[in-house]
Length: 122
Image (cartoon, rainbow, N blue to C red; front, side, top):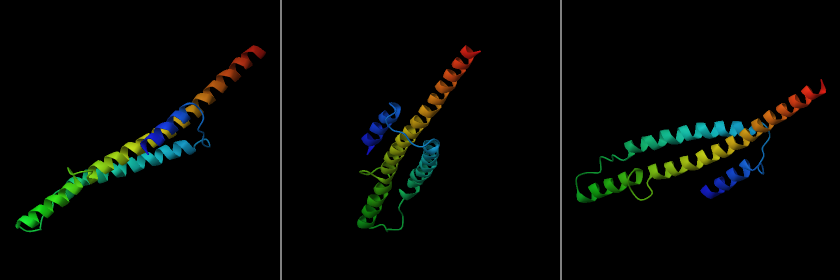
């Protein structure tokens, strides 16, 4: 998934990927909102990593530790998965921003060209 957005970012930078004017900006803003929510969820995993109430028997302690590591510190724990999601959505946002930047750049170039032609007509 990560390489897909890198490829799309390259396509956007070269002008091969286009969206209707303003759509890319709205998508980037949506990505920012989603990133914020994912960060909030990632930050909450610390609370999930403190499992209590499974007793003092070795099996209860082992189970609490296992569940704690699912939230944070274990093999592909929730906090790691959320960090990976954040990285992909950041790539998505950057791709959309690159598309929007091309529109701005093209409009500035067109305005400069028109101004140049206008000064020659006078």
